[in-house]
Image (cartoon, rainbow, N blue to C red; front, side):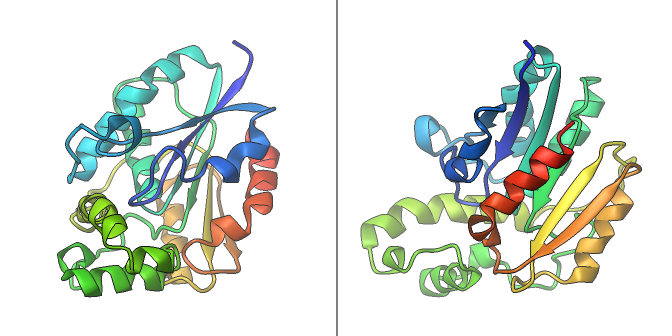
Length: 233
C-alpha cells in the first residue's frame, strides 16, 4: 500500500458526507476516509454518544486498521472534529500505534480553553438552541422552519454539543506531530485562544487565519486543499 490516507472527522451534527465535497479534490492523490459516528448515516440505529472520550475511542477503533495498513496518514477535524483529532492522537500514542504525519484542526479553540461559565448550548430550549446554531453560520435557514428536519437533527446536535461542552481539559504530553490550525476571522474564536494550540505540540504548529464565520471551510476549500498538499508529507 503506497497510498497516503487522510482521515476526516466532521463537526457537531455532521456525518461522513459533511466534508465530502471539501476534500473531493484530494481523492486522486490520497485515500480520504470520512469518519461516521454512531446515531447517523449507516450507524443510525446505534445510540448517540454524549461523552467526548467515548467518541474518541470509537474513532480510534475505526481507524486502527487504517493506521496498520497505510504507510502514511494524517487527520483533519473541524470544530468538534478538531477536539476529537487532538484526543484521538493521544489515544494513538497511548496504544503505541504509528503516529499521523500531520494534524489539521479548524474552527476550534485550543483544548485548554475552558468553557465553564459560558452558556451550554445543548441545554437551551429548542427555539434558542436552533437560533444559536443558525448564528454560527452552518445551519441552513430551511431547517429552522421544517419540523421534520428539526426532529431529526436536534438529538444529534445536542448529543455532540454536550460531549464538546462537558469536556474537561487535562494536561497531556505535547504531541510531537506537525499541526496546522485554521480559524475564521468572523467566528466566535479569538486569536489568543487559538494561539494556545502551540502549547499542545512540540513540533511545528502553524496557525492560519482565513476570512469567514465558523464554517469558513466551505468558502475556502481550495485553500485548504492547497495547504494539505503542501504539508502532508
